[in-house]
Length: 584
Image 1 (cartoon, rainbow, N blue to C red):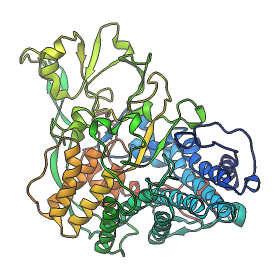
Image 2 (image 1 turned 120 degrees about the vertical axis):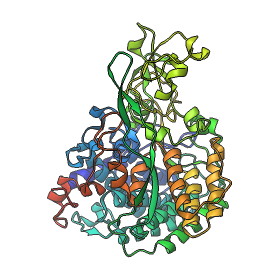
Image 3 (image 1 turned 180 degrees about the horizontal axis):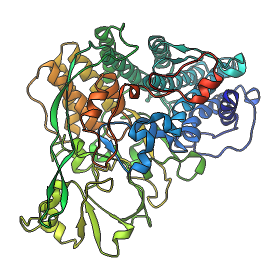
């Protein structure tokens, strides 16, 4: 089993692939023939083939079959959707979720391919040294990111310093969390020194750069630092039971959403990080984030909000590392657009045919000021499905819009005439507390063709906004709350959110920064991992009271802190003889 997994991935690498397009994006041409690594030329073209083969793991493995981003996204407090989609993963029964196998095999296949690429590229003699170094830096980055995904999800994991073709070794023991992070830091530090900056004439859009490595390094240090913070560290989270039940004007039970309440959580120990020095790690997080902010690894800036999620903005400097799919090729497709936005009957139609399932909860929506673009523009407020055409129906969100859309409150009591802009549309407005009515993001709406199931899309793994908030977090924990407020406000200003003008105590700043991350990176696969690193995952999930807005089970226990290692790995890898706590 283990051998076969690696061979499948290596076959992807061995495709004579993808000359990079005029737009310098990877994976835009179809593979044309099989060749072995030894047949790849000692040339720039050969380097490109190895590099592109490694990048291809994201699309022709992890994202293609829709396991990604599900395995990163669905187990979080503010995320919800239909029970058939959330399934075992969304309900916390991780061992029943077959798609979680890809969370393990996907990164390890990529790591193996990167090791192969590094071995061959490093031996090339007919390639400009800077070009060769840049390629090696890209490979180090990809490996480091893969290990970052693994160590956050599984804790101690095996480390492979070479590929299985060279060593023939499949049985690697799990290394400690600290050892894995040391490897990640080493690889990213090398990558930052080897890769081109975005302004370099040889930099190829769509690839990672020196700034990507520096930015990810800041995030890695912040992840370690938060996890190493003392047990009992306080974090305030706005959450709670989603709704109460009342009788409507017809005597029927109706769910009425409640406002989230501030709850004080005390950090629990995060296993594997106990011996780490939180202050020293936050100092490193601040150092690397500031290097990016100061332009030492290239110039980065926040995109204007109205441009941020346009498809023409995918190569902008804010997008520091992400995966873009090609809607014209079935091999390099993703379900991102379908999951979050849905596709339509015909291009440009107002009627959704299917999809648009994953959204955020009322507790999340109520975090925002109404003027904040992230809900004013970033959440779908009116939408129509194909089956509503016959009766001129239309869904609306949030529930609190009931009066201005229908003239009646959620219980059916007449309050006033609806706002003219809504009454003029003449729709039969609908709302219910189910997976049909969530805070659906508009982040992934803009695609070339919104009437196909798998159009082009972009999944952001790292944005410049993340670097700014990491810097704010680190400075706050280092005792510099005024500096933290300055960079928190930069992110808020872009979204027309209310700016802070008073420096708050560190505990309040900490909570606001974590909350800002929840607002800024919603539906980007980040929330679970923030809760985990801060040691408040169990408290945040269980504060919901069992079931969320769409009746998804959010009750969690200690075993949910780590994903279970796939049974195939334990059965085959003789160096691993037990699973994570709570999983058989």
